[in-house]
Each structure stands twice: as C-alpha cells, then as structure tokens.
Length: 460
Ligand code: UDP
Picture 1: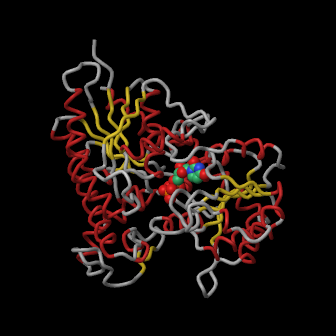
Picture 2: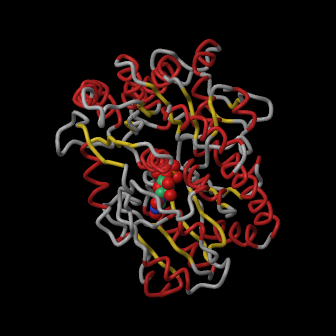
Picture 3: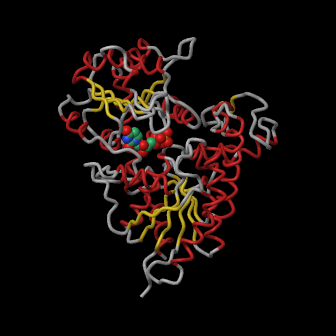
C-alpha cells in the first residue's frame, strides 16, 4: 500500500508568515497528508510557550512541530534582519538536508514534498537536489509578488541600483494600468534606515524570486482571483488558493507568537452588534509615545467601545504600561478592552465588531475582508501601503488617515474617520459583497479548485 504524503513545511520566522503556512498545513492534514512543520528553534519555543494559554491551539493529529537552528546565539537580536537572514542562509540548508536525510529510509517518515516560500527559498533548492516535490507558498498579495518580480525591469529602467537596492529615482509607478500606484519608498527594503539591512533585504527579495522561479513545481498564493485579478494575470503561474482562513469554520489560528487573550471574546459578547472598534497592528509595528497617546486619546474621543491590541513592543518600551495618557485606563473603564494579543480571526468574525483599525499587513487585510469588516487604514511599512490602496481605492471598503505636518495622526482625525466610516452604510455593504465573493471562491470557486488540485498533486 502506498504511504501517506508527508509534507515538510518551512516558513520564514515571522508571525505573518508562520500563521498562514500553518493554515495551509492544516488543509493538508484535513485532506489526509502528514505534515512536519519546521520552525527555527527560537520561533518554535515562542509558539510552544504561547500555546499553553487557554485558547485551544491544538494543531490536531497529523501535524508535528519540529525545529532547526537559525545559526544565531541564544541572546542575539533576531529583529536584526541582516544578521538573521545571513545566518539562516548559511546554516539552515544543511540542517534541513540532515532532517530530510534522516527520514529518507523510513517508509513512514520519508518526506514527499517541501512547502517553503521566497524567504526560505533555499529549502526549495535543498528539496529539488534531493528529488522531492516542491510548492512555494506566497504569504503576501499577488500584487506584492508582482512588484518583487519587476525588480529586474526596475534595475534596467535605472529606478533602483541592482547592487544594493538603493532607490536612484524616487517615483510612483504601477506595474499594470489597472493596479494601484505604488511609491519606490514603499519597497520593503527601502523602509529601513540602516544601509546593511536595506542591502540584505533587497538581496533576499531578489534571491527569493530566483529560488521560486528555479525550484518550485507549484506556486500558490494566499489570495483570491476575485481580489486581485490583474496581478494574477501578470503572474499566470501563481495560483490563488485563499484566503485560507475564510474556509475554516472555527477561526482557530495556530502558530501564534504570543498567548491569545480569549477573555476579550466574552467582553465582545456583552457589546451591542456592530458597535466595537477593533484596533490591531500585527506583530511588527511600533509607535513613538506621542503617536501612541494620540491613538489612545482618539479612541477615548470616539465615545465608542473598543478592543485594542497593545502588544509587547507596540511602543519603544517592552510594555506600553507607562505610555498611556495620565489616568487613561480609569477614564476608559470597561468601555475599552486592552489586550496583549487577541484571537484575531475570532474577533473579526464577532457580530459586535464594527470596523478594523489596521496596519494592513496582508493577513490582517484578508482576515478583515473575509469577514466583511470595513477598515481604517494605518500602514506602517512595506507592502502595507499597497494593501491600503486595495482597501481604499480598489475594493472601496475603507478609509485612510491623514497625518499632520509633524507626521502624526491626531486624535481629531481619528474620530473624524471613525465617524465617517461608521456613518456611511455603503462601506459595510460593499465589504459584505466582497466577503460573499471570497467565501464563494474558497468554498466552491477558483481558490477552492486550485487548492484541491495542488493537494491532489501532493498526495499523488
Ligand atoms: N494576530 C493575532 N492577534 C493579534 C494581532 C494579530 O492573531 O492580536 C494575527 C493576525 O490574525 C494575522 C497575523 O497575526 O494572522 C499578523 O499578520 P499580518 O500579515 O497582518 O501582519 P504582520 O505581523 O506580518 O505585520
């Protein structure tokens, strides 16, 4: 009898990469594959620590978590992307090869397919060398992937320097006439002040494309054709299979780096329908004290209930505790619920949520879209600006904030946009229409068919 397909999943060690790949892993398990999920040791520890919360983070039978070293020392700064990326590329391919080799002669453990992404594209190369099938899983939008694929053309046009990614001509451009305009300053690598980080991120992006082009048998993307038809027509080999979470009944995301505070769900149960402002900025965004306080005061000024994720590290200190305005928490009382990390998928499905104040990371974007929640966009860096353009200008399900001359979003602006968004039923109606299209796509349409085909091929 033929043994089960055994997939080795290798995500980049960042929250917005681990969660969606874990979701893909669960789909594979659901369809009868075995999955070994290989995080770096550091991320593995974070996830298993966070899993001890009340929230059921059980990955289920068939999904095993393992880890490999990223090559850095225990206390090294893993937010130093230049160091992390370099070390991963030096150390991890060899470690991955050992993992694959150890299982090779055991019929029940042998890996039959490797799933990786651009940032861990070296895993695709290792797999090909060892004659294993490969799937590249794109955790960002197809439009962002298309921008990355246009790097050679941008170098040829003299817009960026091919040796280190320096922007030679600051300008805005669009890669297809119907796609939103983006600015060169929003390239992921261009957002870093430090030259070494910029250079290494640029090289990683360029190298990622090369790995995927050369070594991926299948290329899939956690997006839907209904969301970005033009980007998918630019990249015909990239198959939309998402949003993966939109077809999950429970909204029980795995792979969180922080323990989820599930008490906020019972707090949400006590709020009126469509009354709550949900505020979350993903795993990376950090605010200076001034901006953090303006946001706090803006929420106070709205006079509406709010659920705010103030993650450790959201301000420049380890916890934001000392950064709230004087007497803030007493004044807010039970009208505002502040948590360190929320079960976001469940929050966005909750009927009490009226809108999502978001940094527009791709996962947050598609989670909001899949639940018909209108947005207030507060992008921080990289692809978040392009996602904001989709939300506000293409799908028309949200509004952007304006900054003052000092680059701050003021409390008055915050309240104005909340009132404007919630005062116009059109945003909610459009968001619900888009949700319906997305749900159809993952339940029986294009995304569903692509996902089924890829899994059939993996199982074959
Ligand atoms: N998330 C969560 N709880 C929170 C905040 C975020 O579970 O309190 C999840 C969110 O659902 C998403 C991921 O963390 O799946 C963040 O990914 P995204 O691409 O939006 O942002 P990034 O962290 O990469 O900037």
